[in-house]
Image (cartoon, rainbow, N blue to C red):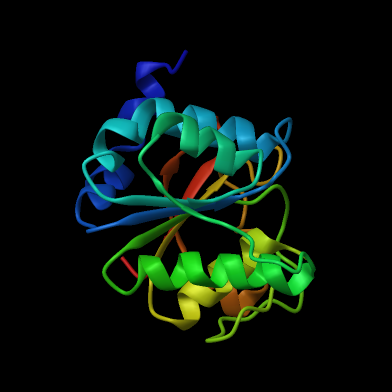
Length: 186
């Protein structure tokens, strides 16, 4: 259940989501992760707003599966054979390119960003597909909303990314999961 205090504390993010032509989702592929829980709580509040826009997501479990459950008609980006790390990165890059400069990438990382992460026009996640998608989106000028679980970034804490990434984000409210919402390029 989402408490009304969570909903009212996220009004800035609600207003922001309305202004985008399409919304892509990225996040942990582990169904039991704090990121997947955060996504489920987020969608309970935001799915009505997001649902009026075209939605896209990947083909994995976890966050992707939760999004597909809320949006059965979502565009689903598949991993193309041969199955190797590069194929997963290419799938994520196709999703971010679909979002484009007029869209919004909503990301649910399961942990802090890798220390080497930088905005880039090429996919470089340094072991984290979600953070790699965030870095690519920033490098391509996309708007990004990062939803962090309280276990990753409690409200009042600094953004959990290298300074070159963190400097692009601003705190925009408490996430429905109890964590925090951070926005860039809004």
